[in-house]
Length: 310
Image 1 (tube, one colour):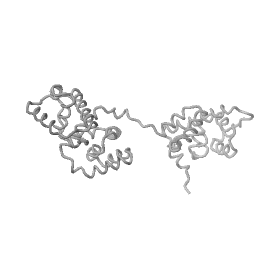
Image 2 (cartoon, rainbow, N blue to C red):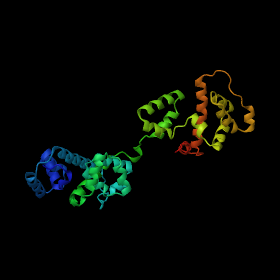
Image 3 (cartoon, one colour):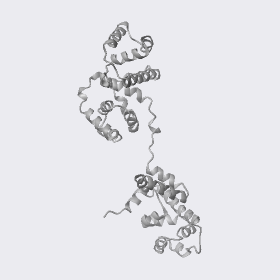
Image 4 (cartoon, rainbow, N blue to C red):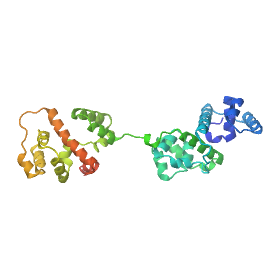
């Protein structure tokens, strides 16, 4: 029984189509077939080995895609002399989406046509078993007939027409989640971050590279950056944000204020609602984020520089 796509020659696939949809319909869809061609296909149908159901489905999928693509293709478009040149026009995400669902033999043939960097990007997205199978196939492509390689190129070219545009691809990561958290209330921000830390520690660690808190400002910001930040915030907001902070932290902030502001500073006395303190701290965090957007510093570098290695 034939079970592998590359084992089928072009006439074999046409014979499969004939057997499934019938000769009359196939002849109408496959324009340009002569009577001699039809007779050859009939003969091939009789002598062919049995084809697996899964492979028949794959052949029919390719056939239907090719019929549809012919309607979309401009008649004036010149035929390419390089079967795999369409791959050069695909973004990396598109190439990965195209190949990761294919059989290892198909992936291997396609990867043999691209640079080593692009090969690694595709391979890195495969599970270990599939990756090993693809590597094995890459080492034995000399056994694949030229017609089989051309058939694979044709199949992938057709499927590539139905890929989303590159701009439609996005993969949210820690930075995206950190941006979302930064738009929440301090209470929601804390609750969601705690939940993520419990359920996905790796994601939580990635988020923390981009997630700025008031404590980060107090402990990680260099003095020149801290000075610029505090000079951009109202003194009342600073005083309220520092409510409950240690004296060392208060002194650090005051030491980076102009003398005039230092003289005007008055600590907030008495009990204050935690929500008000949180809002004041968020005001300062938002000001810091705006500075980052303006290109004044890189948050990842600032927070990363605070990590110590023993």
